[in-house]
Every structure is written in C-alpha cells, then in structure tokens.
Image (cartoon, rainbow, N blue to C red):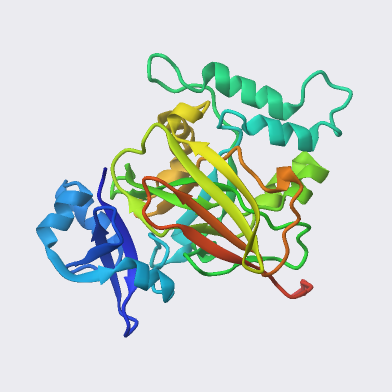
Length: 331
C-alpha cells in the first residue's frame, strides 16, 4: 500500500510533515513544513511524492497515536491562502446512495414516476463508468467551502446557529494541487466527514446548495497512490461515550456508480478549477448516513470514521455556533 503523509505540530508548535508506511509511527520529512510545499517540490522536480520524500531524507521518529491523542495532527492539506483551497463534492455516486436521497425527496415528488435523485443515480449507473475509459455522464456536483472551513482530526465540526441538522457523511476525499501550467496533480486520498444539514436538504431539493455550506473534516492520513477498489469502513456516532449508532460504509470504485477518473474529468474540465497553485479537496460521496436511520444529532456527540487501509481514525465532536444575526449596512 502507498506511502502516507501527515501534517503535525510538535510539542513546541512547530509544523512538519511525517511519512508513514501505515503503522502508528512515522518519521519527519526533511526540509518541508507542509504537504503543499512537498507537493510543489515534487511537481517542479517531475518526481512522485514518494521519490521526493526519499530525496529529502527522514528525520526523527514520531508516535502518531500519541500525536493524535494530544491533538497535534492537522488536516493533511492546507494552503497559505485559504481562499485558494476549494472544497467540492459529488453525490449519488455510490451503489445504494440513491435510496436515502430518494426517501428524502419522494414526498416532494409524489406525483412523478421517479424522483430527480433516482434519475440522476440511474444516469450514473448507465454512463458513469464508460467501457472505453473516456469521460462519461456528468455527476451531481456541489460547492462546499474554502480552506477556512477545513477541520482537522479532533477539532469540532461546528453547525451554524441557523442549521436544522448537523450530521456526518463518512466518505473518501481526494486531494489535488494544480501545477504551474494548471495541470491537476492528485496527491492521494483521505478519510473525510462531509458534514451536512440533511433536514434543510430534505425540505426542498433546491436547498441542497445551502445544506452543503458547512465545515468538513479530513484526515489524519493522506494515502498516496491509487485508492483500493473496495474500501470498507465503519461510521459511528457516540453520545456520552456510548455508541448511539454504527453503520458500515462501502467506497472505492467497486462500490461506486462512477469511475474516479470520470468524477475528476467533470470537475477539472472547468478552467476555473485549473488555476495554478490552487488546492482542491473533492468528496466522492457515501451511501451511509445516521440521519437515514432516524438519528438526530446534538452538540457533544462525537463522530468516528475508520476504514482500512487508513491506520488512524477520523474523530470529531459536534458543536453548535451561537446565534449571530447578520445585518447588511448600506454605504
């Protein structure tokens, strides 16, 4: 399995990059403080991330379990200017993902033979994995935020005061950096919690865009290389330390209605998303939601997501922001 990269702070607060082979220990990578810097060096040199790490050399050993327990592991990617990191995603991309969405929207589409969600899902089943390997049907797509909304392992996912729900979406996110000529380079994959407001979405499908404008958690590890075809993980919601809900989630192309290459094409086909130096974190979707099982989350609940081949889980508590009405003042 591929090299894993993590971003950490040491006991003095100094940032660094750690390379791991998938265990609970790793080694500091020389001369770089961020994965973004490492990626740009690799792109400039025309090398892989693994070869760039090898060329920079290894430093001190790091106990990753201890670093995670003490809140020193950061999200596996960031950008010096958060506005140049874009969070986006695709939905209805997984086998079974249409069922939960269809239930949400069936009432609003009771007079139709098939909901828009089911039609979109069937389009993916029929054309999301073209036999010739070329571009297929385009998926549902959404914008989620920028680098200011990225949450690292252990940090709270904060639901805004106006939200009607704040629930987990356990999935895989791919991480990209655009080269100097705009070519997108995929660095790898990370566990992700694409936190959303499902009650707002259920109320009216046209509010999907509103429901997605929330923070999202990624990490701890960035898995370089290819994603296994069949990834199986567990998503949990804990309340007061006890498991309130638990479910298996399946991802990887064997469990998806779209090829990853097809999802990438339909994102990066827009020149706007090939701006040199920008970072993209793209969420591939899920078919497993505690919300679909009737769970109503509340502040203090803890989301846990784990899946092989990732060695460390992604754990984040749920918080709620205080009411802060926004007033626009004329000039």
